[in-house]
Image (tube, rainbow, N blue to C red; front, side):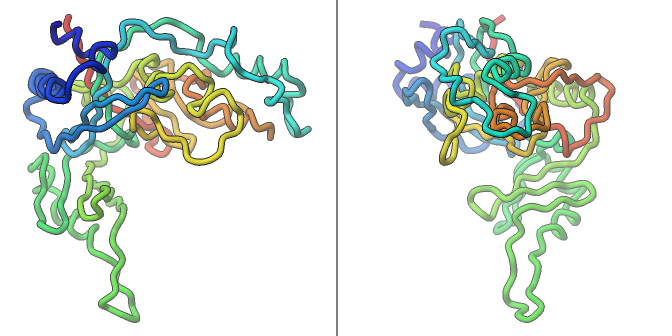
Length: 328
C-alpha cells in the first residue's frame, strides 16, 4: 500500500500508531513550507459516524493543524429525500414569522442550504480555528521565558508593542494583584492566550481583500477549503442537517468530531469559491426556531458572494487555512 492509499480514511484507520506517525512526518516534510516552524506534534482522536479514529495534530508557525484522512467518495449538501427527520417537530410555534406551516419550513431549508452532491476529499491538514481576515499568525510568544518562536522579523519589529500589550493591569487598591491578559489587540498586533495560560498566539494585523488574502496564504503553502471540504469538516463527516443530528433543538455543548472550532457570532467563513460563504447571519428576521437554528447547519448558505478586490471587514469575515495533500 503506497502513501496515497494509506492516507485515505478506509486504510488510515487500520494503521498502527507508528505507521501513522511515519506518514504524518512525510506530510510535514513534503507538503509544509520549509520556512515555517513546526512545533509539537501529538496524537489526537476524532469521531466519524460514531467511530473513534486516531490522527495527529501539530503546530505550524504558531497555529494548530489537525490531519483529516481523505475519502474517495462522499456526499455533501442537504438531501431531504429519505432523511430520517421528523418535520412535524419543525412546525413554527410563533406567529412572528412568515413560515406558517411545515411545507414553508421545508422550502425555507431547501432555499438556504447547498444542493446535495458527490465529492472527493483529499487528505488535509486543517487549521483548528478560523481567524478574522486581518490576522496573519506570526508565531507564539512564551510570556514566562520571553521566547518567541516563529517569524523573528515580526517579533523584532513589534516587540515593544507586544510587551506593552501584555503588561497586566494592576489593581489600584492592591498593586500586587494583577489580571492575566487573555486577549489584546493593538495597532499592529493581535494576541490570544493559549490553553497553557502563559503562551500567546501572535498575529500581525493586515487589512485585506479576498484576492490579497488568498495570494498571501498560497505563497506560504496554504489554501482555503473548498465548499465541499468545509461542509464535511463542519458536519464531522455526517449527512445530518445539523452537526448534532436532525433535531431542531439540542441540549449541551456540540463538539466537532474533528476537534475543530467554528464561530457562533454570525460572521462569514471564506471558502476557495468567491460565490460561496459559509456561516453568517440568519436569512430572515422571523422568530421561528428554524430561522435561528439553520445558520448552525454546515449546509447553510446565503446567496452572498465577495469579489477579489472587495475590502473585507475583520468583524464580518474569517478564514481557515488548509494544506491539501495531493499526488498530481
